[in-house]
Amino acid sequence: MLHSLKRSAGPADTGAPVDHLLGCHARIRHFVGVAARLGDVDLQQASLADVAEAVSSVRRYFSVALPLHEADEESDVAPLLLSSENRSAVEDHLIMMANEHCMLHRILDELDPLWAKLEAEPGALAVLRAALQVPTRRLEAITDVHLAREERHVFPLVATLPLAEQEALVVEMRRRRAGALPS
Image 1: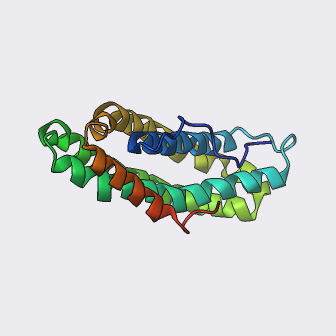
Image 2 (image 1 turned 135 degrees about the vertical axis):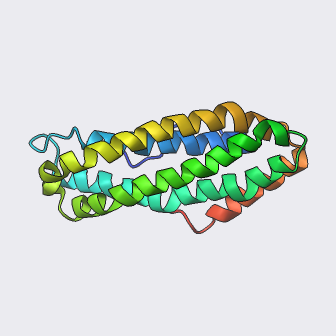
């Protein structure tokens, strides 16, 4: 099978906001990987149903779950860090984070119509393969840089926030997902 619809294993969720954020990053990497593997699928060996299922899960992830994660970062994490004593250490990284979110969405806006066509007609992969290649490589590249930046420069500072702010952050992340994601 091209991929598993089960969520990819990420770090153990201890209830800390950084664990939650890292879990999201593990899922982002998983679905970027599935998108990249679509270009390598041999239609003589993979079923059309597997291709349709894989592309459907990729589209669902990037249209539903990724925006929730970005809201966690831009609406909750960034304001807390900007009001903390770590503002000067993180401000430039938060600006780049928001800019990279915009870049990711431009790439996803380019890929989604191709994925939609592929979801409806999985046999069209042979025709769409070349069109998917360049934007998928750009998606991989920007995602690698973006996630590494957050994990290196932003997330460690989240762990330094007062415990009450970290707990409130987790509550808000969970509230945001309540009803938004299938269980």
